Image (cartoon, rainbow, N blue to C red; front, side, top):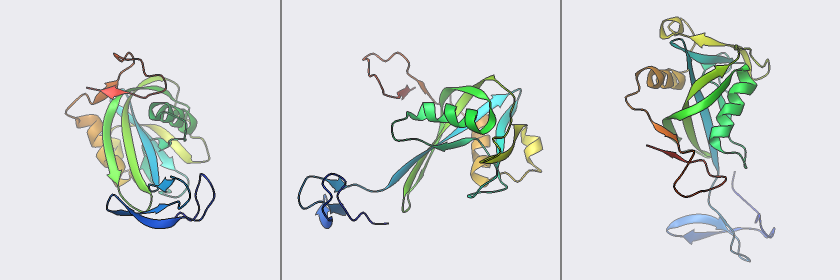
Length: 185
């Protein structure tokens, strides 16, 4: 869907060339609509050689087994998002260990998805009964007979055969940056 009105002053937007790209911009103020984006997060929570999966109860992906995850809220750091989503969908408490993988999916709403390796803290998987109707920890062997979504299969491979430690949370950066979610090698 194309942006029609300025979010700053309400005037109808026009299309202008900005830096070689046609963009919707306000003729009255400095507002430019840079595009539509979404940020998704996913959890790779391991326990006893198994990974936490949920079965989707809603579209998209109804009936598929996926890793827990969801979308970042406007004022929420992505590491907080993934912890919240795991707890909401499964009742499992987990904390971020590192960034395990990133997927970039350019489309009408450009989606960036960040998958986190997470440390299990507590709780037994219980589906929320709304977004997911089943949840549990599964081994790669158990997953062979399950309807696991293709992207989740790729993420599970990353979880079990990843070749690096990924980017870890920088909890004590050299320069204090309150409100930032910082990750580094």
